[in-house]
Image (cartoon, rainbow, N blue to C red; front, side):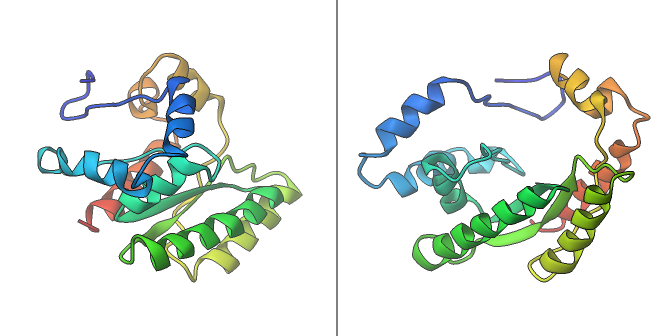
Length: 180
């Protein structure tokens, strides 16, 4: 689907993906289906981002198989850090079995609440524990503007151009551009 943003196309997920996950469970060569589908359009795009669900099911696994890099968003909460350990072990498994060149582009601490002890402690743990696997990018603060922009179906940079997270996202984007 083409968008109003110059040069940006979007393939939005929907409830039908749950059916695809069930079909993929028994499909031949399922791990490589997305990689094959994307190879047909790779020449048309500078970047292809695959936004995975916050689970480690088949769709996330085949996305890791198809990817060159993985960017890990992580909420600055204790339980999110614990779940990231499972993601890192899945990335290691994908590297050993199906995508030896998969690398971590970095970690983006998100939904940060700098006025809470949990937010401060979790961010410190993220920086200490995850800086060894990739760049820990600037922290994205919690804000209702994200939900508001999403409801309007527009990026935060268009919804609220002066939002303090916009330059942070631009910094992350510039770093990702250097990976290609």
